[in-house]
Image (cartoon, rainbow, N blue to C red; front, side, top):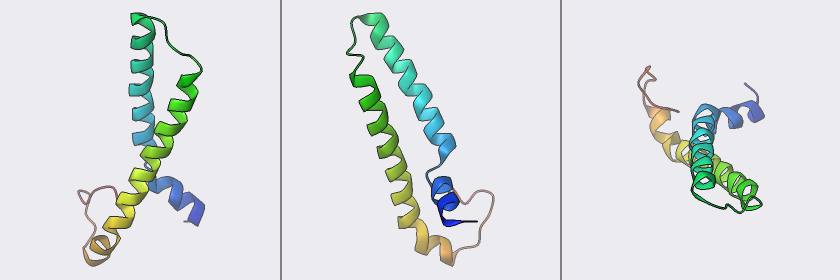
Length: 79
């Protein structure tokens, strides 16, 4: 697996997709409740995706030594 492809996989795209669904739900609820600063939504969306990806990558880096020493199983986690 190439480096770029591995980095993308380590960001756990399916988790980020679910986070985006929750974000969209929150944005729609906020719009339903009253006026929303529409220009803030794209900024918040970008910051959220970057924070989620960075968190997943940091988790992978923290788990690197443990994963290297252990045998992989279907229940090993995201690493």
